[in-house]
Image 1 (cartoon, rainbow, N blue to C red):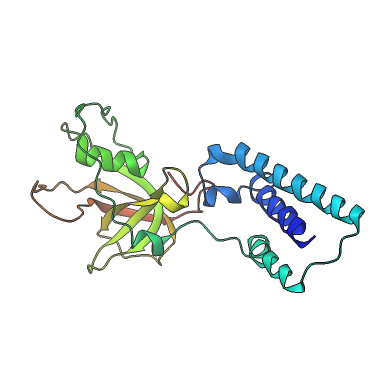
Image 2: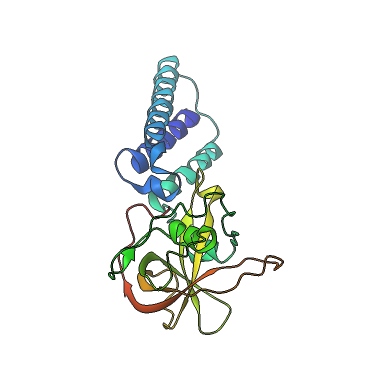
Length: 226
């Protein structure tokens, strides 16, 4: 009977984070929601049918220690882990995207107003745009704060998923000319790209850099990943 209750609790936990809230986006891409809801329903129904069947047969109770199987499920209900933050980002060094053959595929940035863009687009323009459309153009990047080891700089960061949080990697841009806010604070940074020569023989990860003119705290977005 305890196994059936665990199935019902597990199915209920899946439904709680996917059907009745948006907590699931802390762990997987939004497109997985229908599959999570369906899986939660199936697991819950299997557990319920098994519980009814066992009740009709009047089977004896299993060992009391079997209820310990419920503890991880209760943890999902009571302590839902948050989205990945600076702790994971500090341990993730993703290289810049490979240079594309279509080096001039990015549209020019027109006007003098700051352009809000995803972190991945900014990094792509830095490393894959031979026209340097970012040069002298103010942009706005939104992400959370990750401390840097080097004094006088920090990272504005966004995690990117291929499938789920297990394969997430950090998109980090070095922020200069602004004091670092507290780690994991969500901010919108306004500034301009800092061009620099990239040594093709250099080892390690090379990060894009932004000279900040303004840093504003913002609410964490509903979808924390790119």
